[in-house]
Length: 403
Image (cartoon, rainbow, N blue to C red; front, top):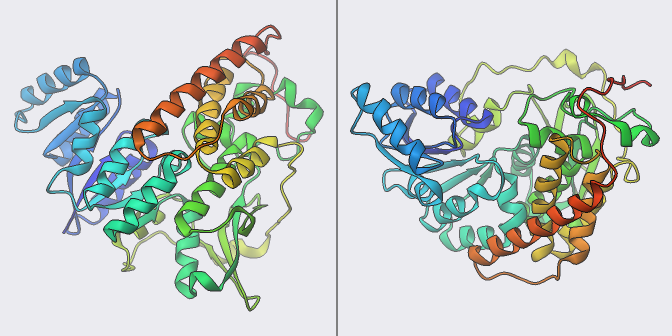
C-alpha cells in the first residue's frame, strides 16, 4: 500500500490522480490533500477519501471547511492552511509519495520540503523545476530519492531512458502539438483573442497552461525541466512540432537508434507510471495502433513563437533567469486573460523582464522566492506601460486557423 499526498488535489492532475487511486484501491491510500480555494470540491474529496490532513488557501477557508467536515462527522480530519499547511501536507510522517500538482511557484516550498523529508515525488508542477530545479535536483540526489515526472513529455523520456544509459543519449526530442495557432500567420497574432488562445486542439488543461501552449512557452518550460530532470545541457533537448500528439517524446542514442513513447492522451497513464515505478501494472488505458497511420512533424517557428527562444536563453543562463522567465510569464498571461494586453505582448513582457534581471545563483528557496517577487513587480510595470495600446476585447470575432 503506497500512502500518498496530493498537492493540488482539486486541479486536473489532482482529480486524475484520485481517479487512478479509485481504480486501484488496494494499492494506494490518500493520506493528505492540499487544495486552493475550491472548498466545495475539496470537501467532497475529504468525505470520499477520509485523509488525515487537508490544507486550503486561507484561515477563513480552513474555518469554513472544518465546520463542514464536522457536520459530516469528520472532525478528526485536521484542516490547515497557507504555505505552511501545504508543507505539512507534503511532509506528513505517514506519506510515502507526493504528487506535486499545485500550479505555479505556490507549490515550490512544499515540493522542496517533501524532497528534503525523503519523500518520493511525482512532479506535475513544471514551475518548481523551472524556478528552483538546481536546488531541488541537488537535494533529491543527496537523499537518493527519485523525482518522477508526471508531465506526459518527461514521463515519456523517463520511459525511453529505460532502454539505454544517460551517457548514451545524443538528444532528447520533446514533441509539441503546436497549439491553436500553428497555422495562423504571424501578422494576425496581435488580434488573437482569449477565446481563441484557450481553444487547445488536443489537451484539456487549466487556463494558464493552455495560453502557455499557445505561445509555446509551455514547451520552453519543458526544455528547462528536461535539462534539470535528466542532467542535460539545453543543446541536447530539442523541440519538434507534432500536431497529432501521438508520440509524447523521443530519445536519440549515440548509435542512431531512436526510442519513442506513444500512448493515449490521458494523464492517468503517466500518473499511474509515476505512482507504481519501477513496476508496470495492467491498466485499461489502451492505444489504438491504427492511429499511427498519419504522423506529421516540423520544426517550431521561433520567429512566430519567440517565447520558446526566450526559454532556451534562460535555460542556458540558469540561476535567476529561469525564475524571471516563469514569473514574468505568469503575470503576463494573467494580464492577457484579463484582456489588459495583447497576445503578442506576452513575449514582450517576458523579454523585458529577462533583460532587467541580473543573473546569479541561489542558495535557498527563500532567495528564489524573493527573485520571483522582484520579477513579478518588473512584469507588472511593463504591463502598465503596454496598456497605452489597449488590447482587443474578449468579444472580438473568432478567426479560424485557416484564415
